[in-house]
Each structure stands twice: as C-alpha cells, then as structure tokens.
Image 1 (cartoon, helix red, strand yellow):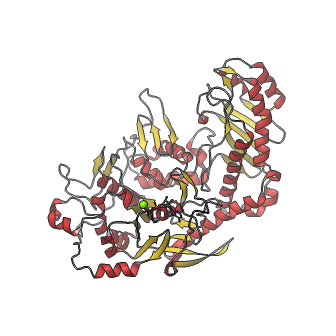
Image 2: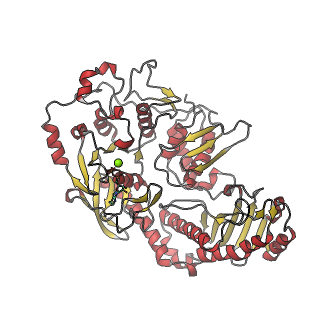
Image 3: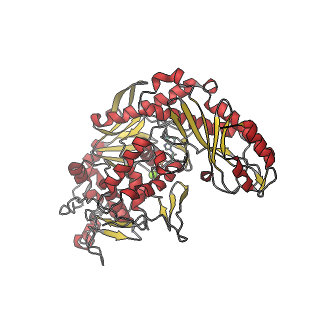
Amino acid sequence: METIEVLKNKLESINEKDYGAYQSLKGEYDYSKFKLLIDQIPKDPYAPPHTGIYRVKLRNNFIDQFNNIFNTKISKIAFRDFLARNFYKATLKKSKGRRGTGNSGIITIDKPEQAVLERNSVLVYKEIIEVRFFMGLPANGREINSQICKVMFFEELPEIIKLALFPENLDMSNLGKHIKTAEDAEHLRSRLESLNLVAFIEDNSILPRKSGTSDEPLDKNIAIPFKSPESLLVEIDLPHSGKTKGMGIPKGITLIVGGGYHGKSTLLNAIEMGIYNHIPGDGREKCISDFTTIKIRAYNGRYIEKVDISTFINNLPLQKNTTQFSTENASGSTSQAASIMEAIEVGTNVLLMDEDTCATNFMIRDQKMQKLVHNDDEPITTFIDKIENLYSNKGISTILVLGGIGDYFDVSNIVIQMKNYNPINVTNRAHEISSFTFDKRLCEGEEHQISIKERVPVKDCINPYNYYNKKSIYSTEINRIHFGKNIIDLIDVEQLIELSQTKAISEAILYINKYVNGKRPVKEIIHKLMCDIEKNGLDILSNKASGHFAQFRGLELAFTINRLRGLKIV
Ligand code: ADP
Ligand code: MG
C-alpha cells in the first residue's frame, strides 16, 4: 500500500509521455478514508471500460445504523444495488466527463436500470464495501495528460466516493425505502403460488413507459393508473406496506383483448417485467409475476438445434422428423414452436405471447381455412389446440394478448378487455359468444401428445475462439453477444433489461463448458451454474474482478445457448 503522495509523484513524472507509461500507476493507494486499487489499466485511451479494473474499498459504516435490516438475501442485494445507483449518480454530478482522446476523462460505473439486481459492481463483505468502476485515464492522442489525471484522482474521485458511499451524505430514508420495496416485491412473488396466481398488478400502478427506448415510467400527469376489475381483485398482506389490493391473474389461460392502442401490450409488458423487483418510483413496484414467466415470440432466421417441435409441427415437406428439428434459418412458426419447447424444457410455468409478435399460422387455423386446406396438408397444429393440454397436463399457464382472434374465447378461463387503459373482466360475455357460435372451427391435433425431451449438448461444442484463434467474447448491446466466430442474436429474448446481464450471460456460456460432458442435459448444466453463482457470487464468471455483471435467470441463459450457432445436441 502506498500513499497518495506517491501516486501524485508518479503522475507528475509521466506527464506528456506515451500512454503506455500509465501502467506504472498500477498498485494500491491509501486515501485514509478509502483505499484505491488499480489492478488493470487499458493500453490505449480508446479501450472499452471492461479493460480497466479500478476498485475502492472502504469501511462499511452502514452496519452500525442498519444492522437489523440485513437479515434477508434480498435486503443485502437491494443495499448494494442502492450504492451502485448512488455511485452512478455521483459520477454524473462530480465528474466532468470526457476530456481528451477516446474515453479520456470519464469516471463511470455500469448503469443500473429499473430493477433491483444482484450485481458485482458493488460488493459488501461484513466490514468492507468494495466498488468497481472505470476511469478513462486522460491523453491527447497517446500523450499522457497528468494535469487532468490529477483532477480526476484527487478531486473528482474522492468527491464521488464521499457523495455516494459515506452514510452522512446518503438519504437514509431513501435507502430504507429501496430495501423495503424490494423485500415487499419478493414477498409478493412468494405468495403467488399459494393464492393460485401467476401474476399480480397492484391498483394505482403506472404501467406505461416513457418511450420505446426508456424503461422509466410515463409522466404521472399523462399515465392512467391501473385499476383492477372488482371480480379479479385480490388483497395481499405485505411485511412493510401492509395490505395491498390489485388484480390477480389466476393460473390457467388468460386472454387480454381490446381495441388497438387501448393498452394490451403495455399490460403484458408489465407482467413480463414482473419477474424483477422494481426500484421505488418505477410505477411497477408491486407488479409481480411468477419467476419463471417467459415471453415467447416468433423470430424468423434464428438457429435451432435438435428441438422436439412435434407437439406443434409434423410432416414438414423435405424434413420428416420434427422430433429433432434443426435449422440455421427458422421460419416464424418453427421459431415460435422451438422457443416454447425450449422454455418448457428448462422449467417455465407461464408463457406470455402478444399477437403482435406471433406467427399467425402458429396461433390459429380458422374454420374457413380448415375447410379449404385439409388437416393432412397442414404440418402445424396451432397453439389454440394445445393451450388447454399445456395447462391440464403440464401445469403451464398462458397469458395471451389478442386483438383479432376470437376463437381463443373457446379455450380461455379469463378474458380481460383493455378499454381506454382500464381492464374489464369480460369473461362471461366472451364465453357466451363462444357457446352461441354454431359454425365453430374444429379442434385439431389431439393425436399429438405434448412431447418434451431433455437435450444434451455435445462436449466441446461451445467454442469461444475467433478466426485468429483468440478467445473472444464480448457484448456492447443488450441483445447481441459476440462469441468466438459467432454472433448470438437475442432480439427475441425480451426480458433482459441491462447490458450487465448480457455480459454475465456471455461469460456464463464459457463457464458452463466445464459441465458440458456429452451426458448432462441443458437443464442440469444450467442448474449447476446457478448453484455456483448462488454460493460464490457472479465473480465466478470471470477470473478478473470485473464489476460488469448483473444477475440473470437460467431461462435467459438457456435461451442464449439455444441461439448459439455451433451448439450441437447429442
Ligand atoms: P395495444 O397493445 O392495445 O395496441 P399499447 O399497450 O401498445 O396498446 O398502448 C398504446 C399506447 O398507449 C402506448 O404508447 C402506451 O405507452 C400508451 N399507454 C398504455 N397504457 C397507458 C396508460 N395506462 N396510460 C396512458 N398511456 C398508456
Ligand atoms: Mg399491442
């Protein structure tokens, strides 16, 4: 450990030298109130943040005041999440940002979005808080600028740390709220099963988002708060906020219908995101869904490797065997069928679909089409003919947004109509319409049982090496991973919300390689990884102190692996 005087002297001695001279700063420095650890410095000013490793460690002065709240796992996660947010906000306030070439001058940390997540940018050991962040050491071209660097190290960084991590500068009531909100949400989710529900949406929630690119809530003056229909109202007692009322969506088959632009997709999106615990002020703090809820959509062009889609698709021209269906280029319907089977394979309980993003020929064959094209000439058994079986035999519920297909009334348990952003329970009317329709479509496909096979990846099929035979794994967008020679397209994996999750998943693919032995099924491999993370944290995914990982579900990892071109199944 060296004094900060040493750091100052080092900085002065390398002024105007080549960027490479920054390497001499590596080491540990004592700032008295905290310690700065510089483990890794990028070799040039353009290098992306994950190539630098900067940490601070300080005494956890919160334990004296907050000892009693760190009882649950979620409270610890929420505490760390809160500090990460604070640090991010403090960098915006106290750092002057980019000054010089490339990333010169920036001080930043992975940006937390609207959910409270386990993340490894802030860790707390009993007495110590560790924060991992990034500093772009400044240069003009490749010429070191010590003047700016000194400002960063001796003015901006200490101020950021003081503002973000010292209890005396924190709003303790906000911290308490952050933790309690997450605990209530977690509790709510744990109650769903015993109440026979798959989702709950609290009255007065704000579901719409600011824009297509922002996950923040729509302005309170414009947004219409959610209000449950009387007949679906459920009351739940929560540890911190007491009794809460809202709409409970029971297990089974639920339709969300209504005119265009009346708020159907917005409601479904809130249910999709109900797998997360939202931060206070998000508007969806008590919109909670079953943790295994998965959004399914059609996405043509995706990769599929030996998935049994025979439940839905049989006798394809040129490819007879759909019990092991593979393609480099799926159609809309085969992609949707494969995604459903892959989700069931790793243990989903709830499927969500929005007509907007489904393949029509996968969803329905109406009665006129049944008359024209004989069943024997149609490889697809449409979802409507399997949806009841999925629930009665496999316990898998479906929530479906529909604007145009009334035939689903026949197979529904609950029908909710969105009208001017208000939900109305129209189940009785829908069932009436259904029973008074005489010229109904025929039910097809009883002969195909729901067939789910465990798939076993071939040993060594996961290859992270690129064309230059160098290990190459990175992601700069939520929905895209560069993995070896391949790009994994995750556009249709809609429940990822942070780039840090994608980064963690991309490293997780490499990590699980050690469990891929040609005998273990996907589900078991993922279970093993999740146990390892549970036990030892997200840090196990990298041999460096990364700080760029956030928690993801096994389902998203499974979906990612399944989209890796090169995955081979035994
Ligand atoms: P649908 O799927 O029924 O066509 P959407 O859910 O896409 O409709 O909603 C249409 C528009 O209305 C979106 O811009 C959405 O943000 C907005 N919106 C949805 N719910 C509300 C609400 N409760 N209050 C205000 N605006 C809303
Ligand atoms: Mg819609």
